[in-house]
Image (cartoon, rainbow, N blue to C red; front, side, top):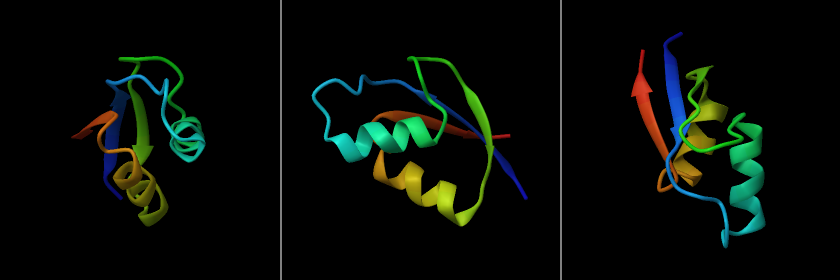
Length: 59
């Protein structure tokens, strides 16, 4: 499976609770701190929900 490097580039302040929980589930805690994850269907769905807050790179 391919791996993705995701990092949060926009703040979660004033965002719906679901989006905040999705960022937390992806392992993103602070801005510009990358996290490497497997590209599973579940993770891709979570990234799609918060794509306006994160930057995604394929490794």
